[in-house]
Image (cartoon, rainbow, N blue to C red):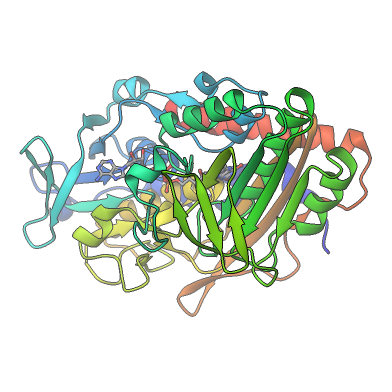
Length: 430
Ligand SMILES: Cc1cc2nc3c(=O)[nH]c(=O)nc-3n(C[C@H](O)[C@H](O)[C@H](O)COP(=O)(O)OP(=O)(O)OC[C@H]3O[C@@H](n4cnc5c(N)ncnc54)[C@H](O)[C@@H]3O)c2cc1C
């Protein structure tokens, strides 16, 4: 197992190898702009889309940048498990779009309902249409409703997923935990990959265990997993043994962890090996790119969006770029860290493409922190570069937190997690 070292001290801009900076210096050739400013429209104001909008605005003031976002308030998923653990307030996760608008980006609060790739327009739920020269889709994920029998939107109101930028879902799960009697059973159903935030379900188990340990010490937590292994497994399991002995049980795919159906009315979860009737059920179902991707014709049969790894332009539709969790990014995990960098990189590429240049191949990093307890975090970082059209890990770069590290090391990582969140969200949302 490699351990992390120099990566912890790197800034996002260093990691991008100056790509965004180079873009900022790029000038439009007269022929490419004509009389009107080039219009770049972005759908989705999460980590990927909002950072792309910011970077485009910073790259050239003459660009007309429009950000279409269906929610007025974005609830950031990173560290939201801390809300379940009682470590953070939901309000700490929530951001508006006022400062993005004040920076000169046209923010449209409406859902995009269709894309006409030939006419280069985006239709909105309001009935309006927005024209673009280049479109960036950054809509995040949706669930494969129906692929897990019994789990649909109505079931999610009883067995929350709490897995999107929707604050109500996190709040619902938190309230269910509060209402549960001591001695109750909590079940987390963790999905197979590819899925958003690979360490997320295990961070969530840790945070809920922290809450239960102090408030409901006779309660138990079972993770029903559709996988046989998970990221940072030894680190998580060592921490659970040390901090939450006997509280968390992880049931792997081979041991019967895969959920075959749910019944929200009776709060029952079925696996091939048995039945669970938890007091609180957190079902994280199988995922795909959010619906606008399929509507725009950029999602393939996997439900995700194949892209050129250098420009993030769709392999299926010219002039449409896809970034963040919706895109297929090879070995790169679906993380906010990666999504923000993809946003900046895509902005740099768009500026270069509009200037008639070919962007250079980048290196990208993803560094995911997971909270295990207050003052205790672990992390995994990797560096990626495009090889044969797909991101692969750069051998020997990155690493994970060391096993058996002293409490001071874990506490330091918890501070890094908080600092990363504050720096990143203030750079994006102001
Ligand atoms: C519990 C949890 C913990 C996590 N922890 C971490 C972590 O510690 N570190 C980390 O790096 N990552 C973490 N992640 C992953 C991270 O949250 C995602 O990778 C990241 O949010 C992806 O960003 P995105 O912009 O692609 O999608 P999103 O953040 O989901 O943003 C997409 C936006 O698009 C909008 N949208 C969608 N469709 C439309 C439409 N048709 N019209 C208008 N707007 C639309 C949505 O409303 C949303 O605001 C975590 C995730 C979870 C669930």
